[in-house]
Image (cartoon, rainbow, N blue to C red; front, side, top):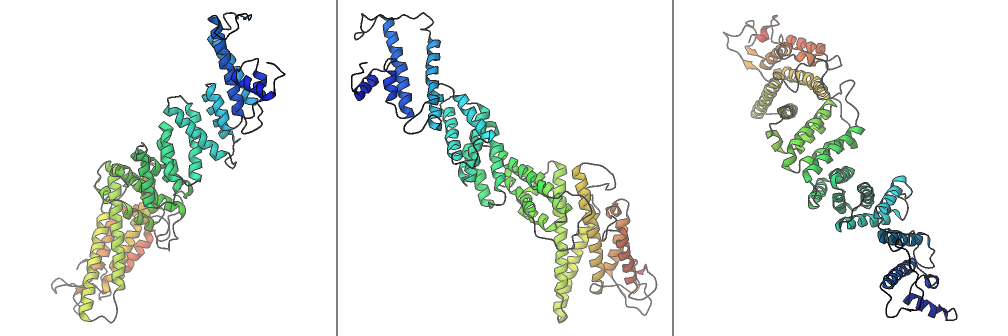
Length: 518
């Protein structure tokens, strides 16, 4: 090209006829990275076209008098040409620009790698940068780059360009973290669904991260989004509940040491306890996950009761759908759940006894007192029947003194050791305390009292003493549930029985067994 021509004219001619001869002029006119890319591509394509035309004997505008260099066959080989093109384009990685973004920018970087058909290497390099921390989450570029490469991965998949699975997973995972940090919960399921085999577990991890920040309706909505984006909602629900329970147990104290007091005022629930409590929500939204909910409910109820957290266990039971009680398989799980329901019916009955006792006032008229007494007698009878039925059944577990067993068995034994003595002592106490109010008249021919005593018996006092026979009965082995701790020693109960025997002498006489004979 004639160097005497004006600069801009030479640039124009170089752009119209890009070649190795005009390359220096053309590249000198480039200001942006895109300019350099266009110039390099134009030179490569024009040279290729010219070479093919020369093979055919030249074109109309070609100079026939030129001495055309003929390369050997290897130079014309397609693979060799592609190699030379690659080398030429690789040089664009280090080109300097006057304006705009340089070759290191994500858009330019990805453009070049797409042209070079090195998308796998491009995505793996970015994934490595995320893993190594060279692109920290605190940097301004982190979120935009994660967004860009995540969408690039998804676009490649849409147009059937293969992407490296591990790198894609790392990039999408990073973008999911960006969405979580930005509070864009409605988009999580959409992008988690692109993770393939890991989609369910990843979306479950997101749902676990909600912890206590979302109420039940928000949780249900988040779970529903899984189905909207092609995920198995039941699998997501089960995985979320399992991971939530695991997370809660990481922060909760283990069940060991002395048995907890259930008489003392209970502290408010901790965050870990509330997280464990609400973990059951995930598997109670759909009937298809009720069997899993049954198993998980037993795990949570066992922990709360073995920790002495009766109120939390009752709250959990109230959250569960009634259909769980109708599940019969597996039988072991179904029976355990029904035993918990049986226990809380009794616990509620004992509360009703206390409430009924509190209703007595000295200023009652005769009719009001008779009505109160009838209600008081009725609720005590229910408590006696229900507790006796529980004690005479194999509640939760048998053979308490047999050592060993799995974790579940050890927890069930702990629950029995906490509540069986408690139920026995509370039933004994309310039966003995009611003797002043609930008296039964006995016909004279039955009464064995001295002539000067009134012919009535303390029916509930008799029941309290018969209860001691049930405790001593080797068929039920209730004595094994008493442990050597304050309030739960067998000696404490036997002392209460002794006081009941002495109370039987209040009507007169000296026969301590008289109360058992009327």
